[in-house]
Amino acid sequence: PGGGYELFVTTDNGISWNSLDIPNQIISLAADPLDPNRVYAGTKSGLYVSNDQGKQWDPVISDIERGVITGIGFSSDGKTMYAFSTLDGNGMIVKSKDGGNTMVKTQGQIIDARGIWNFAPGRDGEIYAIAAQQVASGIAMSVYSTHDEGNSWVLEGTNNSELALTNES
Image 1: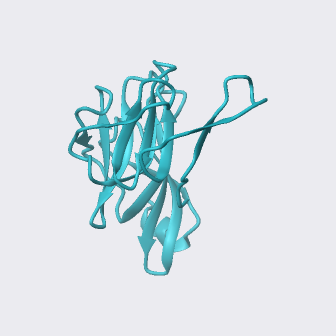
Image 2: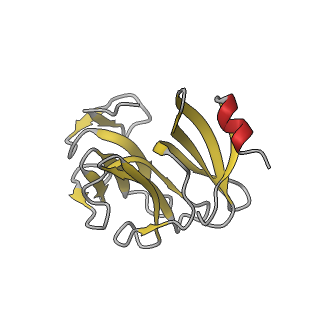
Image 3: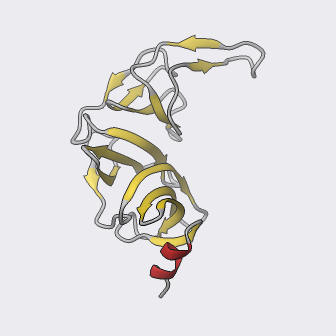
């Protein structure tokens, strides 16, 4: 995923589309499940928020404001936002319980993660992450889950046999 330079919105079930001004190249996009007007955009220059369905964007001022944001998602109750931020090649999973104003690095991290392309809630409160990881043979795509708000991450599946073997318990 390289990101997009345009964002379109429809208000008539897809009959017509309007282009929106965006703050930077968008890599990840997530709608706030608790506020239908609020949208978050992960860009090459940080995290942005719109409170009017994408018409105007403001930077979220936090510890990750300068990093590249490759993934954004929410817990099943919508109260916790997860994001992946990378700055100078160092990536980390962060979470926020206040709309991104305070971002906290999760205690657990996915080893050698170069990007997380999506976070998705599970039925029982778990969070799933689709991660790109650096391995000896290149980049592996993997699915991880956490059942404790990011304190630990468990490999659920990968396209790399070496990674699968090293993560077996």
